[in-house]
Image: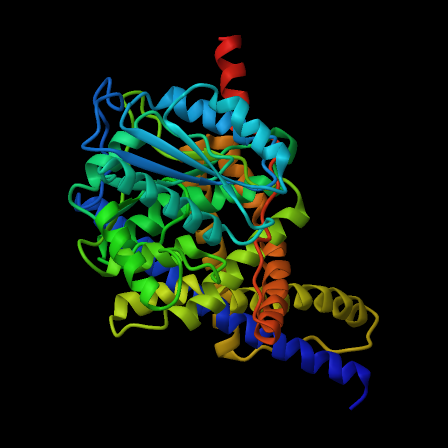
Length: 465
């Protein structure tokens, strides 16, 4: 075989590989689409609207918010100040975790706290960053110490990140839902960033669809709900039980310090035991989604780093640490969660195929090679792939447009290649990071740096109005 024969062989193999896995993925997504449509038409899923004034009433008991922070001097002060102003309840206590080698974040937090007694600043002795779970465990121990000293336990515990903008109704909604559940997750709403329509916009597209459809279907089918790490609440009793269990395993708190996605794992564990978990999708009296808002990475390198951690933690560590269950629905959802490396491989093969086809088209025009002859099964898979892509692009545009407006809905289709490139790069880095961790056993908090806060834009909009 000469070089041209090899090119034709590679083209045929890449085409068959990509088309087969595209069809498998389309069946998966189409099943979720049909499930959501059926649940919607039968009234089994809906988004209730809250009454006027909801969110300012007293809570069922003391509530703690755990807020880990490292290298967040630009946003931590705004997050604390906005949270305290938005949630007026006196039953609230915010535990902010900072590191001794991060004086800028410490100083910003202190200035934002002022004389508000609802905030407890906890300084970690270790040099940061360790892992987010390690910081959370230190905050948990500080909370437990306060409980022992006061003789009063918290009713619920809520997790947030240093860059979050909370919703006025969220605290009361989580508190009310935890009366019946051990774990509750609110939607996450990435805020559009005019300076990064293409990179940051991919997060808006993904979360708009997943938290309006995927998570809703997951909850309706009775599958375990993963935690997003922000806007999620846990009953204090269930968290204490888990902490005791982890103590017997040699760990110093309910959060797994050697896990890159401790929030995801914690949500699944809580959903599968005790009183279970719930995905809480609500709108306030103005029709605004009750969700946690934040700015996601607006540069390609930052987005790849963040998604590398997600793929590494969910796909690789999730397989190792959580394993599999016998429930068909749980297996289905686990496969969806852990498909990141395979998705990256399939997308990389497809884009390589596009480049190769461009070369072969030129060679065919020059009479150097014959056109590829497609078998009937391959032709059918290609037709299904093209039809499925059109369907998936339309669905994404609908969900993104519903939440962010029709312009963003149209842009979501154009952003699909950007999201694919990020997925390919993150998948490759996650595989490398995973095998490196197998060698030295170390995981680090490869955190995202934040230099802007959505509350700035909100305050500006109110001033202009």
